[in-house]
Length: 68
Image 1 (cartoon, one colour):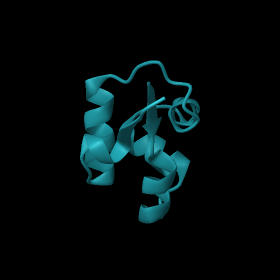
Image 2: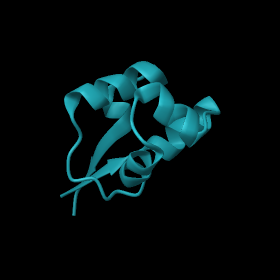
Image 3: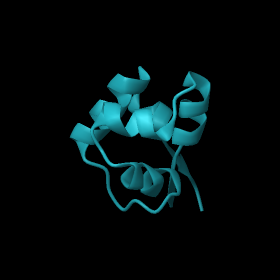
Image 4: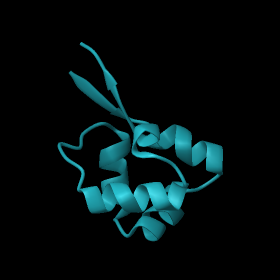
């Protein structure tokens, strides 16, 4: 099972930089990189909520499941 984080696409669609996004969400740019590169092992619901608020999207727009 693989969970894919589609932050690159969402940020590009909104013309938002990683730095601006990180500041708006309240996480470090390094943690944004961990999410974008698929190295995250977990995401707090509060962080996911902030991501969705900043990007005006649903959790399913950020995360998707790709079967093995």
